[in-house]
Length: 335
Image 1: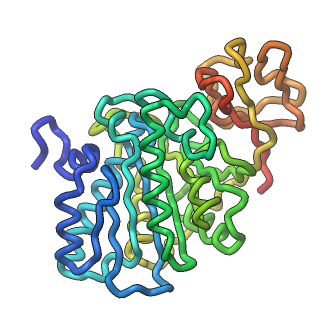
Image 2 (image 1 turned 90 degrees about the horizontal axis):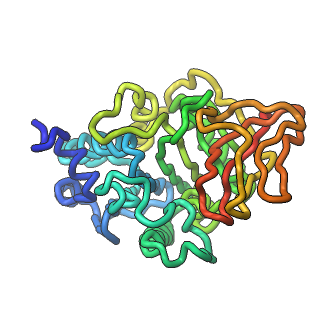
Image 3 (image 1 turned 135 degrees about the vertical axis):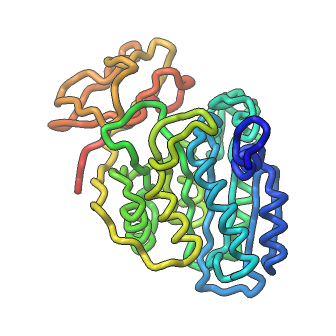
């Protein structure tokens, strides 16, 4: 059975930030359920246990990144129905966050500005954007969720990329994640068949970096393929990450790692300082395209960015960001 405009009911509900059905199913199974803000569902055990992991799953931080919305909708639908028979099916405390609800409804990346640059103490020109208030809601709910959590803290912020990529799936992991938690996170990313991991030394105002820095979470921005139209994503491309997410939520034994992800570190950030900013390559350039030493990356008035190492790979090149924001990363492989 599908909704009137062709979406499965579970997908339509999550895309509209409507948690009424799944919230009721979790509540009926004996969980403590709360809706801390629009588009957020919190499900906690009524028997607090310090060994129980606390997991944040976020989707739709960019409104046009729809594949993870569909994946999470189907996972939540199945899990909420299973707990009615077996409450132990949910083995973690869970916060689900549908990020930019208004942009999802509009079928746009954002309304005024990129929500995934708002998780910073000083927002400058972004402070008046519609997304600023939404970031405040997400920060408050996330801090509250982790405030009484045990040491097992996770945040997986699920995205899809604008550009094609040499690695169809990849993740960005903050350097500051504690060593043991980082190892567990990287192992999980391997189970999810994530091809590459970028260790990131500093925040660009992203949601996952915020939860790592301020809530002690093993957090990652996980890129799962390409931007797509809601209801038209090929969900078979998400099978590995879907199974890994399901295993995390249900506390299942770890799946075998098909291949260890390649690991990269950030060599330099490319910041757009003025409207004169120009990338040295066109919009068809893939993420993880390799550039040789001394090659020009971008120019910005008198500032010229060039490759400093024998080779560097470009990730997230976007000349259209606002002045003052990151317009790309250059990375080098370390493992």
